[in-house]
Image 1 (cartoon, rainbow, N blue to C red):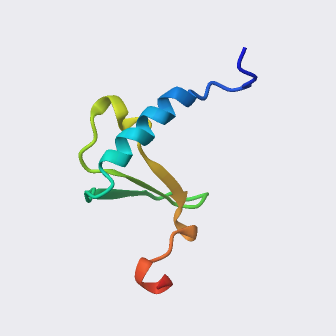
Image 2 (image 1 turned 30 degrees about the horizontal axis):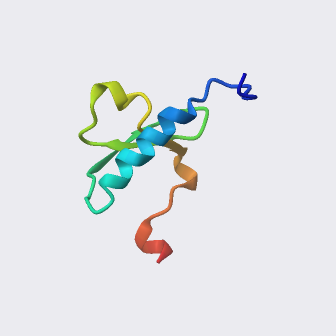
Length: 75
């Protein structure tokens, strides 16, 4: 028993971090998808444009659009 109470795979995370480190000098093209809702905040999902299908379900970030700010405005 590892003491963990969830299904989080720490070894898998270490592998992803090691893979990301090897590409740290490269640029990654991202795309954003906004889903609009009538009764709740709209959601923006950001994901790499070219992502292997096996990683697509775990390589993304979503947030409510009201918390997303323009980069130029924050500089």
